Length: 336
Image 1 (spheres, one colour):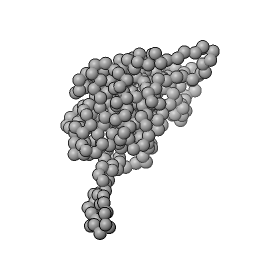
Image 2 (cartoon, rainbow, N blue to C red; image 1 turned 90 degrees about the vertical axis):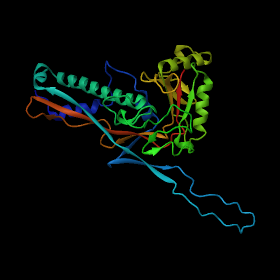
Image 3 (spheres, helix red, strand yellow; image 1 turned 180 degrees about the vertical axis):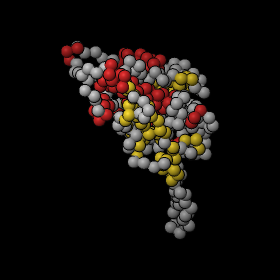
Image 4 (cartoon, rainbow, N blue to C red; image 1 turned 135 degrees about the horizontal axis):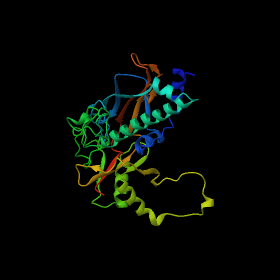
């Protein structure tokens, strides 16, 4: 019995959020940003606009007698950061020949499920790589956290988190020059050079510097390289406690730092303009968001026959952008 396009399409919808494949790699940012509420949706628009408050509106006049002239000099406190959408898609294709060779009950659905998982995993890995490292060759329109990278690999650096001390950063993020507003603490990320070995003071110095200028929330996520994560776990070893296995519940315990999930990602540990490699991001998802179009969050199109062939295909479509609202609450750790 032939399987209709509607049945194939509904199968894709049902398995979209449960993909796992043999090419699996951890995608710590994509999982963490959803878990911590850092994902937003927009209904449309050519660009994404985020208002930034980067100047004091007025000045203070101290009154001794009450007759002093009051300064009415004011500034427009809001300036928009503007981001272009990034669009990408990948097809899921099945041919008539494959359908006939796999005509047993639901066999074609199983093939389709495997291909859906493969395509979904591929897109998630590539998107996660671009966000963390900024060196994807196919998703260069997506913004990156890597402050050494530039959009499309050309021009001035546009990566959000620079590997430089706050106050000396000059990247252009959302069209707003960090160098122009070097004295604005919320538009300069925090940075620590670990000096070759991870120490708890490195993490706490980064944490304190970020939290001292964060307007809301606390650190949401600590994403580390395999090496940094291993060193962090060793630093905590003497503080670990063990219990009998029959006392454990079915939950999975995660390593944490000051309440934020700490985990490794294989994309971390890449070359940096600072000494050593870029080993960790300390992220506050109140200040960094992943914005999806409401109809482009890994959306699956219906299956359709491809004209001139015996194949039919669906498209997995994504319309997304990484945006920055506040960079002062974010941190980068290098050289550990």
